[in-house]
Length: 132
Image 1 (cartoon, rainbow, N blue to C red):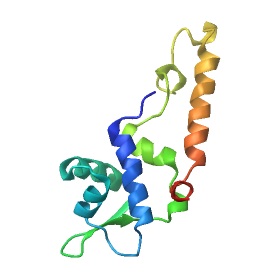
Image 2 (image 1 turned 90 degrees about the vertical axis):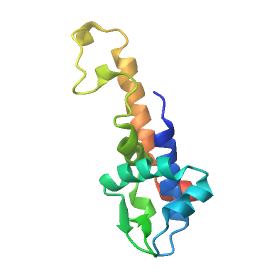
Image 3 (image 1 turned 45 degrees about the horizontal axis):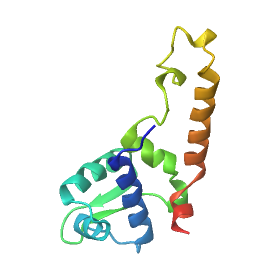
């Protein structure tokens, strides 16, 4: 499993919004400048996070973005899944990825364990944890 740039930047953007949360909306330009991410790429990431319901948005001069919940209510796993989809290391461990060989597969339990370990870890960390 490899986390893409979108996933890494999504986590960075959410952390930026959490750390700069003063109750006001934060402009896309300000986030892009602080994090050295192009506005165009940031728009794509923000759209995914907004679609997941993680952001509040406002238009106009004082518009921008802010978290829709408190930092301790966002897990790293949720943020990564909003941009990456499933975080499974191999398809056969998913409900949709059932493999005909699973019953006799000598490596299935390894992949299943790795999947559980990854998900337990990313689900155990919140934005608040990363802020500390």
